Structures are given as C-alpha cells and as structure tokens.
Image (tube, helix red, strand yellow):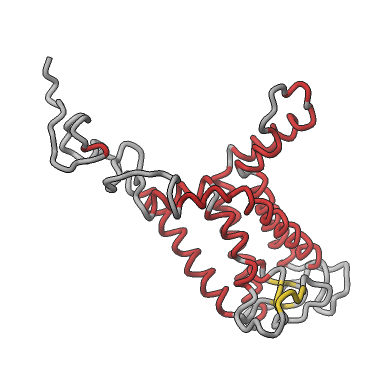
Amino acid sequence: MATGIEPAPQSGATGVHDASRAAIPARHLRTDRWWLAPAGTAAGLLAFVVYSTWRAFANADYYHAPYVSPFYSPCLAENCHTMRGGPNWDVFGSWWGLSPALLILIFPLGFRLTCYYYRKAYYRGFWASPPACAVAEPHQKYTGETRFPLILQNVHRYFFYFAVLVAGVLTYDTALTFRDAQYHWGHMGLGSLLFLANIALIWAYTLSCHSCRHIVGGRLRHFSKHPVRYRMWGWVSKLNARHMLLAWSSLISVALADFYVFLLASGAFEDPRFF
C-alpha cells in the first residue's frame, strides 16, 4: 500500500536523504522553536571562550592577597606574582615569557572539552551534529568519534585525573582565602564565600563526571560483594543525574571567581571583610 513517503532515489544523497530512507522532503516536521536551545548553548560557550581567552593572555590582575584567580592556579612559571604560602611552583624558569595561565588552563579546559555533556553541547551548538532531536544534521557523512580529531575525546579519563589534582589545588587556594591582606589567619571576606561556592561546584561537577562514575563502580559483576564501592557509585550517580546543571554552574562560578579577583587586583573594588 502506498504511503506517499516511499524512497525516492536522489543522486549522491546520503544520511537521512539516502535512497533507502523514507522520502520526506522537509528537513524536519517540528513546529516549535527547536533552535533556541542550541543557539543559547553556543552563545553561553562562546561568551566563556572569549572571556577566558582574554583573561588567560592578560597576564595581569590575577592576584590580590589572599585571593588568586583559579585561571592562574597553580602558578607554574617563574614570572608569577609572589604569593605567600600560595601555589607558586617554579617548574618553568625565566625562559617562559607568556602568561602562566596558559600552562595550567589546558587541563581543566581539556577535561571540560572532552566531557560527555560538553561534547553534546558544542556538537549541537556549533557543528549542528545534530542541531536538535528529530532535526537532521546538515553533514553528508557521519563518522562519530572514530576518526581524528574527534577520536581524541577518548582521553577524557586522563584529563579527569588532572582535573582532580587541579581541584585539590583550588581547594587549598580556598583555604588561603581565610586570611587577610597581611596573611593573618582567622579572617573572612566576601571573596572567601565566593571561593567556597566555586570549589563546591567544581568538586560536584568533577565527581559527577561519567568517567568518575565508571572508575568508582565500573567493571563490577556483583555490587553485593563491594558494598563500599556500591555506596560511592550511588552517590556519584545522583550527582551524574545533574551533570548538565553542575557543568554550567561551575563554569559560571569559576568565571565569577576570576572576575572578582580581577576587580580587586585592578583596584575597582574593595573586598568586604566580615571579620
């Protein structure tokens, strides 16, 4: 029985327009504003890329005692500001003349770029692969993550290990915010609260990672024989269900923490001290 959507051969057509597929002339049948989600995602990611690029290459206004921007921590170059008790590790000598942020940002950014949620976000937002559910992607051929460069997404687990180390350093930086400008302990400012919120979100996002969930509870045949790992797997799974929310929240919080330090270091704002 004819349905009106029998396959119709198209010269050189591939994908959803291949001759073996139903001949639906419309690219999609959706009537809602499906493009809003990928457009909003692209705008948000692009805004962060522009801001972080500016701050990474600025090489200025990233330290105001006792606060150090998370974009510049740990500071691995000799040309870093001297931070008393801070994460100054002169791994790279005087020959490194660029911004020290370029030495460390590759690890948290690499972790986010290869994250399962962010893959979906920028695949849809920038590459239209696919732009939305039930909307065909415009590419003639689909190879997924089986070829270069997208096959490099498989290094996500290794970036996770580095991300944990960076989160540990940022936790140390957060502890240092409970000092005053003279490095005396037992003080708290507005920045201390901002750094606390930021590190909480960074840890929540990092631990909600799919790789973390697999490391904690993967390759187990019997959960009953591993009650501790099962309990941890349950906790990570609850975080994993909110991975998208945590991804955006932590992205915003780390930018806000950096911008707060920038305002302090540039003299545009004074840190309110509570005690």
